Image 1 (cartoon, rainbow, N blue to C red):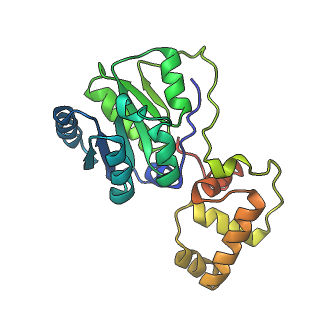
Image 2 (image 1 turned 60 degrees about the vertical axis):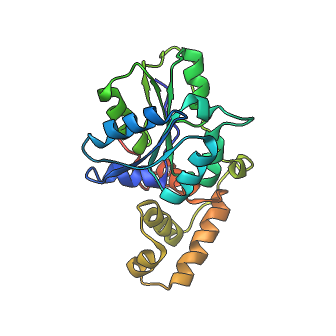
Amino acid sequence: MPQAFCLTQRSVLIAMNSTQTIRVLVADDHRLVRHALTQLIESLDGLLVVAEAGSGHELVHAANTENPDVAIVDAAIYAHGDSSKSALLRGTSPDVAIIVLSNYVSNAFMHRTLQAGACCFLHKDAGITELNQAIHHAARGKLFTYPPLDDAAPPLEPPRPAEEVAAPSTHRALTHRQREVLRLVASGYRTKGIAEQLGVSVKTVETHRAEIMRRLGVSNMVGLVHEAIRLGMVSAPP
């Protein structure tokens, strides 16, 4: 089974706290389907639907304003236009994990969907058990497909934000203090909390963080979390 590349700082934190309520956005161009999905999701423990969307524009707007952990998106909305809504969401709301719902299913289609940035794929023949599994997997940055993806299919490459495509492949060594800051950032500490933990000023933490991003060739929090996992400073969700 190919590895999912949808780990974010938020998914790591959710994986560390199994009691945290998962915030869900439902996007489908049929109102009745949206309402039915919402009722179904809210009947499950630990899930809360924070918004519904009936178009790609509404999807991106709701993701920006309601801060969901997971977006369940109908394939018709996901694929509308010249670029996938997954790419738009990664640019404006990179922490939102995407589950694509579709009436059509094939191994190649599922691969293209996941390659575009979705974490999970569900055929609309799936049941409530598969829906629940997909939401929890997506929230924790893990791959899930129904039906199962063929193990013999070619491996996925990680979808990367455009600003990270040109990131340098070699990383300069971090100082001991910079590694401490990176570990705390990836563990979910805010700037003030890191300053208190290390006994330094907020300005010093901000300076360290900027230098860490420069040395690692990343430009956002998602990139920092990925690097912290790669360097073994925090664990990826199981």
